[in-house]
Amino acid sequence: MNSPIVEIDFTDWCEARSQPDWTAAVEAGKVLHFPRLGFDLQPAETALLREDMLKPGTRNVSLGADGVLKGAAGSAAEQEALGAMVGRFRRQALQLIDGLLPEYRGQLRVAPTSFRPKQVETRAQSVRADDQRMHVDAFPSRPSYGERLLRVFTNLNPHGVPRVWRVGEDFETIARRFLPQAKPYRLWQARMLNAVHATKSLRSEYDHLMLQLHDLMKFDEDYQKNGTQLTMPFAPGSVWVCFSDQATHAVMSGQYMMEQTLYLPPGREVNPQSSPLAILTRLVGRPLVGVGAGVAR
Image 1 (tube, one colour):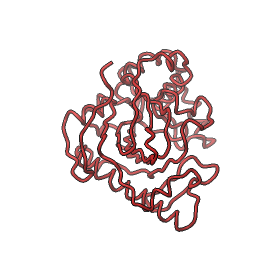
Image 2: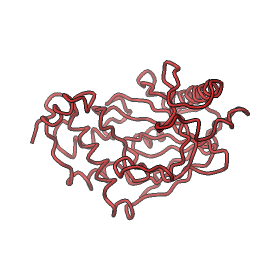
Image 3: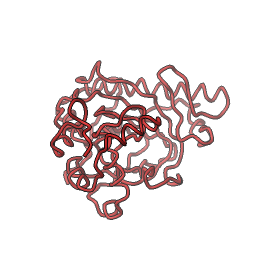
Image 4: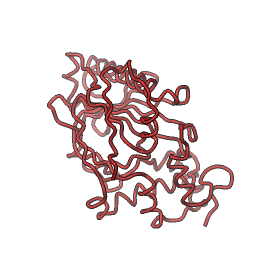
């Protein structure tokens, strides 16, 4: 396996520059790693790096585009400081992507920014929800129709603890392995899920197949243990970027991270033929979204 990690020696968020090879790499499902592009905490912000800043029963703290902080605990002053910290990261992440991937300017939609203080190793989750198992990101309730998930991560850990990922093979290799096991798409099932509001819109065949890949990967014990993969420790003070709907990955350990998601409309990649939608459409041999798609089999 060629390395799924591309190291880039940026040291300043504002001075990010582009290079065609980097765009091609991230669109091929590789992870761009910036080992020296750290997020600098203000002196008082280190005190915010504790698990009880998360409201009980929630998974992450999130800052919406409207500036509203959700999922946070702590005092009013602590929440205000946390919101300022997360907002500063969002601004820097957007600066990075604007310089690194200028081809996407004016195309990206900004999702809420998250602060994740929980320790990965101690989370109790079902197999389907367990991100310690290799997967590609897909949403059960929010059909994407091929919209991309571009994500910027940074490790904030104040104790020198890395955030450890496993990164696997390219998307097409994974799709060829697991597609033969996928259950067929049924339009009536998609309509029923939409009617009972289990999905926010009608699930396309593309979204069905992405969920099938996500689940089949996670439930395959042999693949989880023996599949081709690289263990990658992202040190504190590092940043990494990937399309998480395409990069096969698992989050094995770590604590204290921030993440920014950006949505890219389908077909707006520099090379749309490298996208999961294009790859699955080619492998299946028919449209998976839009006109002509969604025919029950």
